[in-house]
Image (spheres, helix red, strand yellow):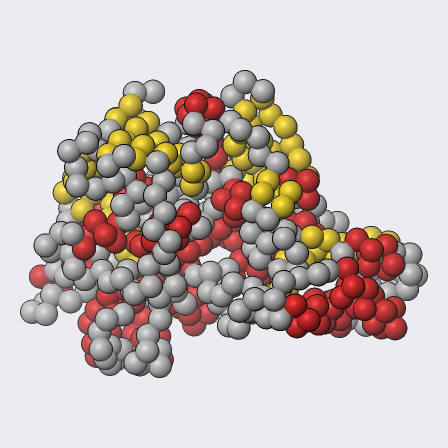
Length: 491
């Protein structure tokens, strides 16, 4: 495939191009937020936190979906690097106004925000409007649950949220029809034209090299040539190192455009997911087959975060407090790795995570697939998270448990996986051994709770004292027992 040094996208209904040839004022990893703020006519996007928490910088990106039509996604622009919108349409709050709506020119979501008194100081309003716009384009008459999920990633200190929820509910009654509906065919043609001339992006500016390969072969070749490059696949973790810690990345390899890493297969057991599948896509795919994973993803970050964060990126970060890892332990997931010259290998997730933010990934290797077996009907899997708030918060302690009982109600198989209790996600193996081939009953659980506290030596930090973490971990086991019902005699 050919190479290009130019990022091209649609903004204000026109093609915009930024050439990274050494003459541009932007480095490749410039965020979309900072790019927009540099323009004279796109100041509506605001920086509130620069870490994807407040939603004041929300924009909507439209790209071709699986059905060939445009797919509208709300994103936190403070976490989006410019190359990530290559070949897509960028929509900001300034683009919503149109004379077809009458004298005010306000889009339906803007008009309802005004009439429902959903705005006071106004700082957060553009971000809310863009989240509501994405909701408007994707849902007709959405449920309250869907509305709240769409707005969870936006914070407001003034209104108490109810007027905003009311505005969203009243606005989304028109099957997504607006002036964007009229121009969609032209936008689809523009995106198709950009896809026809697709090329691997090789960008160099301000001392930074940024690669955006479009194929796995190209990605593996670059990975082998630059084994120390920073890998991004969604960048919700890496972007914070730039926006909050002011880190500079000399070489970046962005995997978000690799076609092969976005494939998935859910018709057979085990299920396979490409490493670049987003967590929102994953959530929508596993509701029936992996319900515990679905329940966890419902409260994972916000919709803006889930639209960006990828399964492979979440695993590759190897965070000891990552919500997904304990659950992947419980599901006995495997990680498939690929090297350009050494080929493929597959590791159980427990072997892949080796230490604090450390993995078994070798120089030149990439995560390509995650394989998750569907448990049999007699296996119960649940996950839990202890945090200061339900959404958009890092866990203090997390846990995922898998249980299978025999016909007598004795423990045939059990997995107790914890996050936030050690330098990496870790199973309470001694406690598991204690519970095996014993009756699943309360007095046995209380004994096991003491063992859980003895198995771990967690750290004390701003979130919790080590003793509090031990108590939380043991109590989660008790909660799991209580959630299994009448001693799971039905299992």
